[in-house]
Image 1 (tube, rainbow, N blue to C red):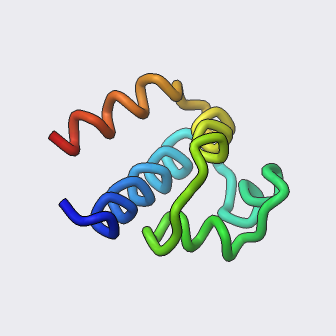
Image 2: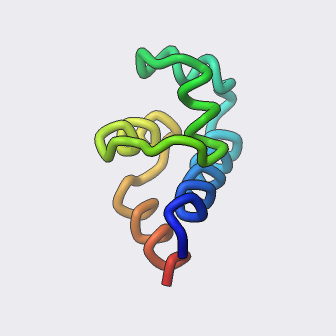
Length: 78
């Protein structure tokens, strides 16, 4: 699997987590992390890499369990 495909899958899963678990808009979520809406948009569309620490912060913000999220991503990528 190519890197850009991985980023797209990661972004889609983050978007689903945000939409399913919160009523946060992309702008609200980005602001809570001190990031721009454009940054989060690029992450959710798989256009940018994300630091592991930012990934954990997003999953926590969205009410998810980082360990479970990472395990689910690992299962998808197998």
